Amino acid sequence: MLGVGILPSVFVGCALFVIPESPRWLVMQKRVDEARNVLLRVSNSEAEAAERLADIEEATGVSNPEKSVWQELLHPSPSLRRMMITGFGIQCFQQISGIDASVYYSPTIFRGAGIKTDNKILVATVAVGFTKTMFILVAIFLIDRVGRKPLLYVSTIGMTVCLFGLALFLGLLALDLVPSNLGIMMAILAVCGNVAFFSVGLGPVCWVLSSEIFPLRVRAQACAVGALGNRLCSGLIAMSFLSLTKAISVAGTFALFAAIAALSVFFVYSCVPETKGKSLEQIEMIFQSSEWQESAVELGDVEHSVLIENKLSRNHKVISYIGEANHK
Image (cartoon, rainbow, N blue to C red):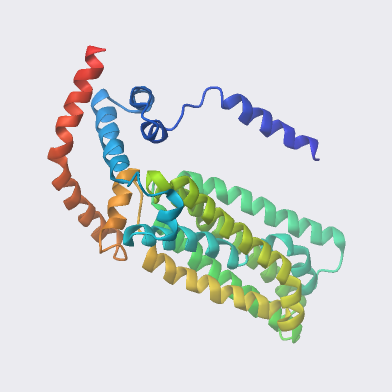
């Protein structure tokens, strides 16, 4: 089982020989010609590549070279503070809503629901893992079609309902207020529903948002801090779950997770802008606006007005890049 892990590692190692460097990183390293070549490979036209390069250079030039990255993170500007709240918050909500408890301890949940034999518990646990995997594929097809924020709404609301339903039926089973078969079936459906809603939104979108919202200069460190928060919350949930179930019962524990999932709905509404179809530089403009907590439509309007103001100043850069590229 451990040896199977070699196969994806070999695949990734081979892929690294053909994967280009990020054009944004190349611009930050003053390797503009290499960045232009990468953008020409992934853009629809030379003009599009030139415009994207102009956007990247403009965004890179905004950062203060005299200020270290960690100084910026520890003493952030208002826009960076908003980004950190969004990025770190979504990473933590991903874990404290109890997904790892649902996956790691699904045998404990099913045993508490009344399943007696190990074989049936194993089948139910495999069903949970299969559901989680299948709905990640659904997210892949939807994330750029319907957007990040709608998927987060569906995910967090669905998780809240499933977690509350799981807590309700586990509590009713403990009091012998529902038939055993009905309680078992509803518990399995609630756990599978929870991981399905997680996999279609909060699971993958969390990582996509983290890679999109931070400015170039601090992106690597800020994403790393967010991932650290994610892993710490995961460890906290995994290590405290059994203690919580002993203190407040399994049903009480999932009622607590349901309350946290409900809070995540409010967090998405308040702090997460829509980033679908926007370049990394345009997303940065959204957070620089004072309207960052409004709806995606209003944020798009604010961003559009900023883009209009900057359009003329970028046009001469685009023209010069095209001319320089044609000359070469």
